[in-house]
Length: 102
View 1 (cartoon, rainbow, N blue to C red):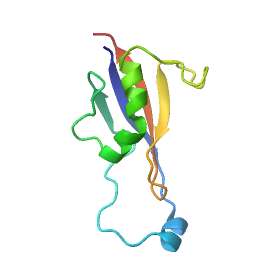
View 2: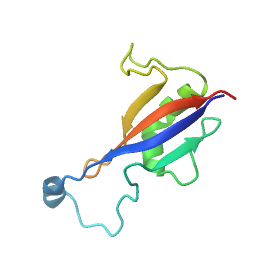
View 3: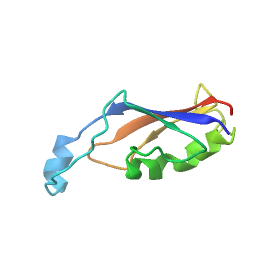
């Protein structure tokens, strides 16, 4: 299986939506732009947000198996994908890419 690198590319925050729809919360996302993780055997890295993992798991597992070219050429690098977490107030975009054969 291939290792898959997961990199937080962009994190945004929609203050207007938060003010209008979100109840105050004590803890928000800890992910920082540029932060990266390595998935081995298609498994979730220990310190990756479990909610973010839910949105990217199938893509990471497919890349680990050597699959790719999602949606008929969506990405310039066919062994990659750009996936966002499901937080509508503070979404993080993650670039995932197969990096190595084992």
